[in-house]
Image (cartoon, rainbow, N blue to C red; front, side):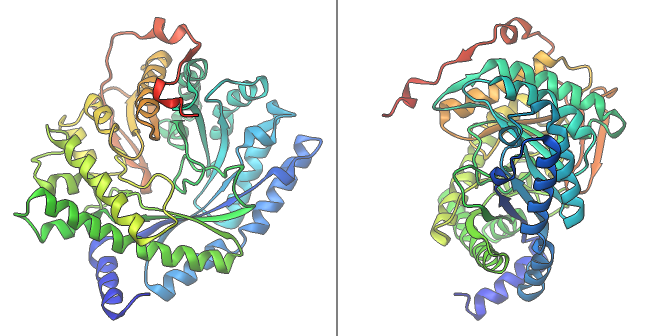
Length: 451
């Protein structure tokens, strides 16, 4: 329960330190919507999403008003659409457009789940489904897509990795007028989790209840403010301070998630603790790392501090809630974090350093703009590297890059809102074409065999 001191402290976090509930995401099963034709299935999908989530925006507004905590995004995730459209995969865009229409009707920010899970192999219907992703993202506004190409248990499906490089390039081409915006709604995973409330990677797991509420909490500014109060503390005290702060943030998320679930008639899923930044100053993960003692994020020591931050956030969160899940750590999207944007602009953070940081953070190479001339095989190789990190370390990793059409290194992309802006960053010029063209499966590591 919250006492008077907790309430006052929370109000201070909201007013001065950018504490917010980043998202309330309702997961909805679409398995009951499968019909004989794509048109009938699309109609059923639209109806069930609008029915189940009809009150999510109002409920979020009510809770925000009652508790004084901003709830920034209202979202929906659905069963991976590749499963729903297995009987007619070429017509999957009909379902995608029905989902986008439902998102507009509901007034939500994003809807995730135009997804496929191909980590051990790609079935014929999934291969056809994957080919529909560029067109679908180019003809929808709020729909998000994700593809899981690897896992610690199964290895990495390199045929799917090769195909995703081509799909990302085609998605960028089809959304050229918006700097390749479609790619900002497409993420490629290793070890994707089924209860992730954040976009673009959210989808509703087949092992979940019919309707679930997952909440994402975010408070980079709160953590930074807490660290400013201990400028000369040793790293043990720094870690303890982060842990205590994460505990407080998570309690706010637990409260909102429990209330939202009850009011929306859904199962309480999880609270995701991830520190998700925005382009606003004072709401940056990079600023936390610099507060600990870096002149600039990206310099030597960045990975060590990020590892400590990620671990302390998880430790604090699991003490505050028994329903911690999702990704729960620290996001490092370049275009969505003012500190990352400035470091990239100054050349102080590179793709190599970002890759090293992904070994210890929540996800991976996220919201990074690269030249539109970057080859599909190079993008596939970036995906392969990140998938290898996730596979070997039993963690979720991902790639969400934007090969901005017509843009060169040093030029900018600007998506606005939470998606932010970013300079086009250089990639290695040497080719990985032969490696990617081999295809096949990179086997799972020996430590994956636990039965």
